[in-house]
Amino acid sequence: MRLGYRQGCSDMVKWHPVCSIEALQSDGYAVLELATTAIAVFDIQGDLYAVEDVCTHDGGELAGGPIEGHTITCPRHGARFDLQTGQVLAPPACIPLRTFPVRIQGGYVEVEIG
Ligand code: FES
Image (cartoon, rainbow, N blue to C red; front, side, top):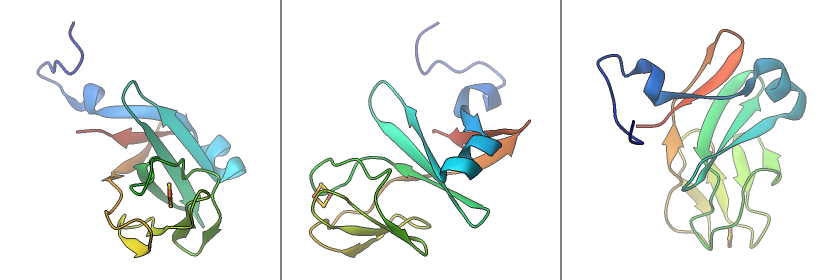
């Protein structure tokens, strides 16, 4: 089967497991590595958010960067993003992050990649 091919029931294709909910709660974040990019999922006081783990300024990894409220700071040059919306809150980035729906299914955190 080709990558991206979807059969009648696409639900199994679109949602990708990331980690157990216990692992996410323990570490605060987890990263799903894909062939073309990476997606970081964050647990902020029980609310889950997923963004592309690629800073739009110069490609830095965001996971592991400091988080204050719903704001993450890129460790490379300090751009700040709202994890709820992906919006840029401080330069040098000027392009929002891509965000993804998150759910918990059978004890696992999953992200939807359309
Ligand atoms: S790579 Fe993130 S601010 Fe430059």
